[in-house]
Image (cartoon, rainbow over all chains, first blue to last red):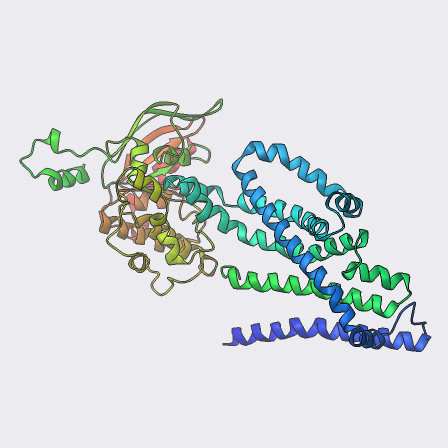
Length: 256
Length: 279
């Protein structure tokens, strides 16, 4: 019982400490802006940003939904294709040796450089943003998934051999389950980066979405709106990250 | 010899002609060698292990003890020589689940509970069994009963990380017994455990051996362990790996930990230590 009580206390502290620090920082910001009388277009006070959240709520939501859809689609397409390609890599030496260097090369191109190319290729619609978001999720998932699928110990593989297991039995009973923790660390990265991908895509060519709103607010010196948009987009990342973390807790019960 | 006579009586009765009634040996190796590239891991091994025997294999590190187990279990092919497991090829023996393997690391699947790990052999190789038109052999004891048998009652639903090293190894032993093997190959299974746990598991293993009648080939680097468990100690030497000497251990059938303090036990231990050192 003492053990359980201790766990509860530490979970409480885990939530309480960062919340308290965040609250203190916001209070410091508010106080600083007021004390030094910083102009609103340079750095708006948190209270002003909050007001914009309420007054511009409809505007923010209208731009939030497209970014949410692009992020989710990009996340799904990027991670799913990475998982499938990782499976192909682990089963075929030729695939791994032939395509892994290309995947590394594509990953080294800055996303800001490749985004205009993709918008040219796929047009100004939804597709280009989804492709950019997917691309940014792809590589970390691929690398982690390949490692995960190769993570069974030599003894586990010898055991499978002694049990005369087929390729599909080895995959479904050993390789895939052992890759799950690796997959989730990749999904956590992808959950936050897919939002960045969608926003970068919107910067290059869009008139709606959080990315477009960030540009619009910047050019019009509407700093409180800019800050509100930034908070909203990082809120989206945090929400997706939390969703993946909860899914991991629910699915991966075997780790402490 | 004692065991051979016993199994002969089991197989055919006293009046049966010995040549026919003799069951095939559990393991027979005839000048079997294993090469890893240019390295000769095992050189011309001749070894005969009778059904029901408890054999320990002892030798300096790198002498090919583990390779010998992997050769018997069809994980490593012989580069020369011939071999049989209960009169069959090693592949046929593997397909028929004649033997089971216990590794030094328990090699449990961390995403499966203890009882799910014990059940694993029943879920793998199903395709192979179907193709061959036969069912996998299954122990009369359920996975839960096997866990109870190895002293893990009440821990059926524990995750491997919640179990101590000794408990994990017991799960691995229960998993090895689920397909009712006739031959148990153990590669330093208690090597990573503390001495108390090791003593306890040694006695438990002797108990399992007696109750199931399984043949056991047990690799170890501990001289006392080798003597305590075995009817015969196979002493190996390295470079290349080969059998140096086979020493029958003539101690009472019911082994006890206290025997380690007797003069006879210490004589065997000294003899083995000398053989190890004389390499």
